[in-house]
Amino acid sequence: MGGSRDRTDGGDSRTDGCGAAGSGSGGSRPVDGRGTGGNRPVDGPGSGGSRVADGLRAYRLIAGMWLRSTMAYRASFIMTTIGNFAVTALDFVAILLMFSRVDALGGYTLPEIAFLYGLSGVSFGLADLAIGSMDRLGRRVRDGTLDTLLVRPAPVLAQIAADRFALRRLGRVTQGALVLGYAFATLDVHWTALKVLLVPVMVVSGWAIFCAVFVAGAAFQFAAQDASEVQNAFTYGGTTLLQYPPTVFAKELVRGVTFVLPLAFVNWLPATYVLGRPYPLGLPRWTAFASPLVAAVCCALAGLAWRAGLRSYRSTGS
Image (cartoon, rainbow, N blue to C red; front, side, top):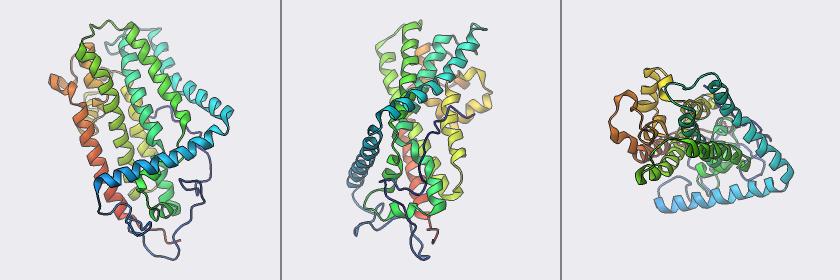
């Protein structure tokens, strides 16, 4: 169930996240995944607050470098952003074509599906903008260029996340926001203060859940190495799944994305409260408000998976 994937990322795979040519570690010395930038382990023991601050600073510097590089070719940036917008818009065009033949899909009207689509699109678009480059990790593991990042005095996760920061991905966010605006204008919903508050909570929680999926998928690539498409099935494929109501899918699939990979908490469950729809699988009403908690748990588990994968990494020796 692959979504509309932006595949315009170019460049040499042996270029590191700061624009310098990456080089593998010399000889056959194994790298233990913690690096030795300066005399300080990158992901070793230390103050948690300090590591977070270092990571945010490294991310800001690397992303800023790529942003300046992008802005040097403004015409190219504008064209690729418009292209990204147009490609992702085709998903909603397909939904509009369906509704040219039917009045409802799975019992949901067009504005209700637009609401689901917009929430999924904005949440995923923000996550893709922030750390969409995580699927490049498998390539770095295979060719040994990850070693270059390990010896720098900055968290590896921040370096990988900011690598090739692509502002053109704002096209996906903009397109999702426009569809969400259309849904707000056409939905027949009695808006209460709680429902209004729940919308930004859904977007932020959905962003965090998708970020966790990106990081967990990257951690899996430490073992699988060539598994970027497996990761994309749960990220790009996941957002495509959430664009449609849960009533059109088999209950087994709905259970899977509720209890195993909790993507249902991005929009399905909280949106049922806003739209006044029956809860999937007969779940209790409070699950509509559990998205922040689920997002926090997902991020914690993704962080543990990342640290385990990083510590298990061994250099290619070339």
